[in-house]
Image (tube, rainbow over all chains, first blue to last red; front, side, top):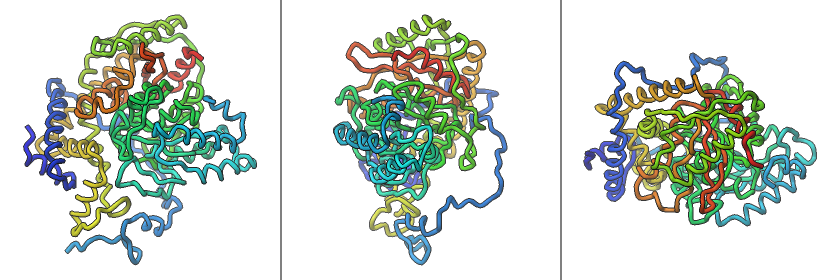
Length: 94
Length: 456
């Protein structure tokens, strides 16, 4: 069972400020989805190693060279919604 | 014109103008989010002047709008990236351009590629190429429909759990999801990093082979890319094929099963040996997928914070408001569902029961595939349990929508190459696709088999 408090907690973890109706809808949807995925519980996985990647590659390394991808800092700052004096601008933190 | 060779017989300018004209004529399908008209015309002139040459010189294509590309915003069909102008291009696009191909526009998708119908796009759904009351499939629905309508001979997309194969099935196309690691994902909006792949839609297997051979290859900008292996091959020795029992049950649409059976007959006529194979673990694959993939999504989508790029919510007073409001306004409901599920399965107290259990189950799934590939060269079945469904039919219940992915997610979780080939139509004239799944790095063999059985 997923409570409204659970939804609020997950929204905090997810950095989402949900509206009232959205939170109510999500409560119902999450309930259905979690009920579905819960069936994995039936499967006996004792002694099985988890999979974390499927490429089969190990310890891939490259030369330690700086690559700016041809981008100047100005091009990246231009993407920020607010920037000033060569810095990204955010609301006051302290 | 439907094949790459037909386009190569014309000038780049003629090709680009014809493609843009078709974009205009087919606007009602809503396959595209934007065109890259000005840049496409410039490149066409350069090709016609002989300044750009290559295997795809002057051939127009369309990219799903989650590939960073010049000439138009890269929106991922989302509000938060609606005006995002990419300062770099995806490696896949750079490689196609280096061979003279010309991107003419960006295709619609489910926002951030989360969905199986393209109905989750912020900018409205794409309509099926064969029936405008039905979905395009998804998430690469726009790329599929643009190819099926003959706007371009090929379009590129991403496939994380079926997002190329299923829309290819719904629109009667060849759709390739390669072995995990075949094509660099640099410059492509990330969804689930352990299953994200890049592939192509074409009208025939030879064109798919050509485009894949160009896009494939190791890239220092994506350290998960495999050492180069993709080399087109001819069909060669007659192969053993396993038809997956769990994909041919009564739950699967009868019209779909009939098309698959017909394809099996065509394989047998070509000398292939076909047996039924049993893979009981498959019934758990969808549950694994909807634990692992949302977990990776919740992590990958953490980067959309309204600070460094993308849209920031207006009037946010504190830093937490900037994050929380920008994300709430910038994401679609399905994005939020997946992020929240991801947060749930990764959260303290649930991690072992869901995420860890799913990753262990994934090991069992991979072992079951490996076991079958000791005796079979290729596994086949339908790509989707139904033909294209009606718009709105699965929108109310997210689990019902997820069930449309039940046949495509297993190959994704195991990192296997899988392609959709057009099998025929159901009694209502809707396309039905057949899925071919092979061992890792057997991509070229799968395409050779598709080409051999193809009806031209």
